[in-house]
Image (cartoon, rainbow, N blue to C red; front, side, top):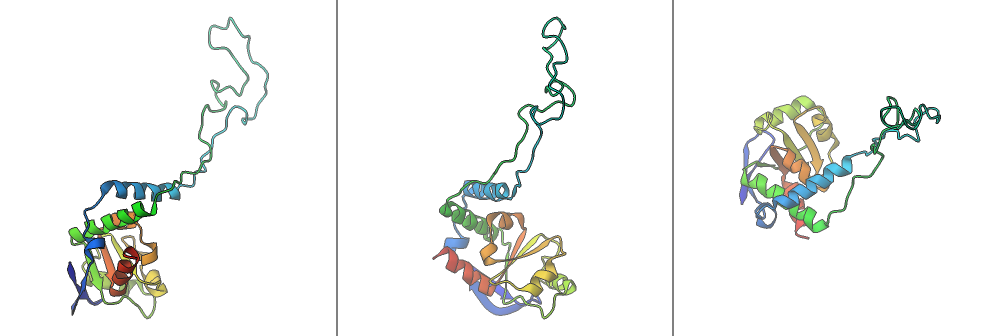
Length: 209
């Protein structure tokens, strides 16, 4: 699959880039995508939720009523879960939600996500992406010329570029990452992908290594 390479003005440069079928043209595996996205979101969870059990609630241990004859449940102390202000039964405690996923599954998931975008013609390639200074106004103008300003767009660079990152930082629908930061969730969460020519070559190198 070949795509025309554009400049930041949105005009064709006369060059084309070939997207490798082994990376951008495979039969997508939906389950691999599901597992990778699930792991990504699970690993981001803090897991710091906590409620107090009956052993942690402040209060007296004195039994508040007789064991039998009260006409209801057997009364305990004021920290009993059946009383207002008592401890919670089986409440959440801090835990780690992260889990392991095999590298081959993660790689298959990313290839599947990229293949979906290629199939939907949601990939744009520019010759380079660089600004002399961080300017959000220039970034917005470039996005409009590339016809992606009104869509949730992921800009993928081969290496970090501070000016480009700072220019897009305050834009809700634009996100700038490097090839090494590329993940299945970011790909699927975007409507369009904008690659630089160098980043396409870097992706081919990573996935075919």
